[in-house]
Structures are given as structure tokens and as C-alpha cells.
View 1: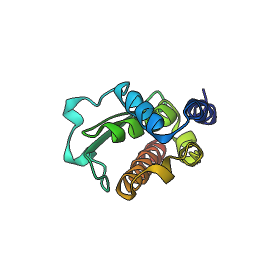
View 2 (view 1 turned 90 degrees about the horizontal axis):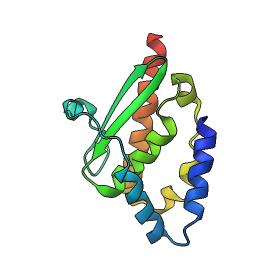
View 3 (view 1 turned 90 degrees about the vertical axis):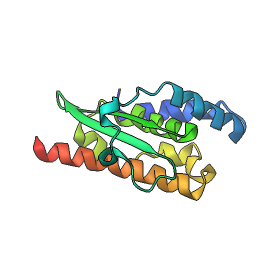
View 4 (view 1 turned 120 degrees about the vertical axis):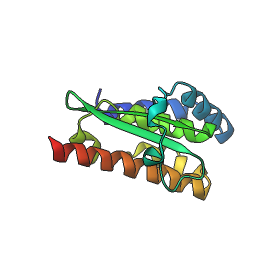
Length: 139
């Protein structure tokens, strides 16, 4: 499934909820489904800088597709990174690099996050795209 289709699914899922408390609860549930990073990758090198909470992100290239795993010590942040992984993982570096990630704005995430969480989300996206750029350079 392409990135835009996954984004559309997420937008539809968030439209089912009437208020942001319900959306936060859903985000927490999404975080519970996150495929966790292997403990060996929970290192300083894999920590997302700019996040208020601890977030570890690991990526690897398998058969031309970037695979991300992550974890966080905060439940909302874990949900945010789980959404990003759902959208970007298992895609080619080119697809990831060119993705616009419009869903973040369309579901209202940027408006309803604290400034520090919003900065953390931007840092996550930036790191995921940087990893894709690095893999593209190696191919």
C-alpha cells in the first residue's frame, strides 16, 4: 500500500472521533501496537534529539525497503512514532523522501500538541527522512 493511501486511512480513523480527548486515547492505543525497537538499539545514537521525552528510532534497509522500529517512554509520543512508522516503514527511500505527510496537519495533530511534542514530531520526521536519504546514497 502506498504512503498516500495509508495517510488517507489514518485521516479516516481520526475523523471517527468527535473531540481531542478521544483522539488522544486513540493515539495511546496506536502506541500499544508499536513494534518495539530491539533493546540493543536503545542507544544514545538512536535517540531523537529535540523530543521532550525519550524516543529511540532505528532503521535498516531490507530488500530495498526501509524498516523502522522505535520506542518511547511517553505514551502519547509512542503513539506519534507508531503513526509515523505505520506510514513510512516498508517503503523505498525515494518514497519516504518524497512523502509530504499531509495527514499530520489534516488530523489536527500539530494544532493539538504542546510545542515541545510538536518539535519532537518534527524531529522524528526529519530523522526518518534523513535515514532514507542515507540509504538512497548507499544504493
